[in-house]
Image (cartoon, rainbow, N blue to C red; front, side):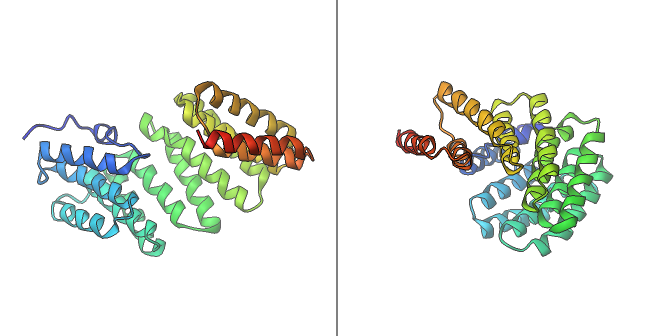
Length: 270
């Protein structure tokens, strides 16, 4: 069988989260190359299961993970951590966070024992997602501390997502100052990564946080800048239009808001 050029980053590079069906095809092609009974093949199958879960094919995904379970050998390996993560994600996505939580906790312990910081942070972040209330905040902060303290660049890349998640948790609780602080930190992390799409999303979140604090003119300026960038790139982001409309409405500028409503209809119909 052909060798997988692997570390796990090679497997993750096959992902297109905007198109899980395409990702499944790419992952299955690599499984055929390396053999499903190999450790690399089993690791790839964990991601096949994830792609199936994102397509709502939960029974198929669990069957895929059953194949992986039969190939687990050592107790503290990346493969076992990824198997536990994906089994937990399937349960959480299909509406059973209570059953998912112990799997995420187990995955965290396995990943830490295996020295796999990236997957340890992933597991802690999933515990946060499956939790609620103060536990959700506590686990997000624990995951952030792990990411910020790790020498692994891939683990550190979790900071943007974690600050974003924590920001929205605070926002949902009406803790708008804390939310804006987290959104600002997420933007800094995204700027370090240099991904234009993620930076724009982070800026949108900062503007949303500003609007919730009543700093509507500042929020409006950011959304106008984002719209100009999208227009220059010939892309359409409905959320930017919707926030422009919300800001203008909050400022009592209903005529301008209606203009953007009309522009959104036109842009969406292209």
